[in-house]
Length: 220
Image 1 (cartoon, rainbow, N blue to C red):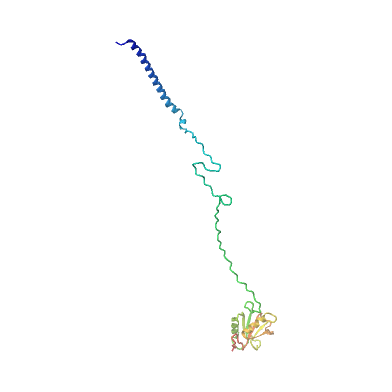
Image 2 (cartoon, rainbow, N blue to C red):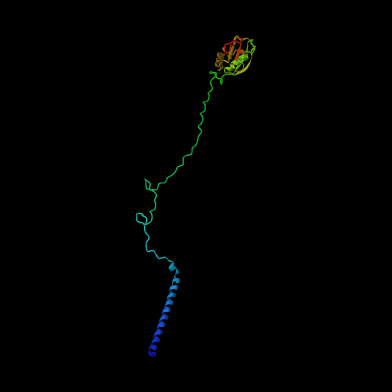
C-alpha cells in the first residue's frame, strides 16, 4: 500500500514543475517576439554603414600627395622663370608671286633735220627736166629706197636746168637735208630759184639727162 504522505507531498512538487515549464515557455515566446520585432523597428540603423575610424590624410606642407595616391603631374617649368612654356606654331607667310615690270625701251628722241633721219627729213618732190621718159619715176624709186619720203613726181617744163640739182629754201633746215640727199644721188645742191621759190615746202629735185643716181649710172 502506498504511503498517503508521500503521495500528498509529490503533488505540490509536480505542480511547481509545471509552473516553471510554463514560465520558461512564456519567456521563450517573449524572447522570440522581441528578436523579430526589434530587427524591424529600426531598418535605417541596419542600413547605415559603420563610421570609419580612419581620418583623411592631409597633404604635407611641401604639396606631397597623401600616402597611397600617385603624385599629380605638373607641367615642366621653363628655364627663364619656372612658368609653363607655351609653344606657338607660326604659319608660314603666304607666297605672293609678283610680276616684275618689264623694262621699257628708251624713248626715241627726235633728231633735228641736220641728222637727216626719216622722222625729221623733209618731204621730197621729184621733177623731170630731161628728154628721158620716166626719169622722174626712176629717181623717185632711188630716193625712196634711201629712206626719204617722196610726195610727188612730175615734169618741169619751165626752162632748162643744166644738171640734176637738189633745191632747198634758204634760211631753213632744208639745207642740211638737201646736202645729204644730193650726196646720196650724186647731184649738186642749191637754194631755190625764183621759178620754184613759192612751191610746196620740202626739198625739190630736178633731174636731167645726167642723172646718175646712187649707183653712179647716167639716165641715158
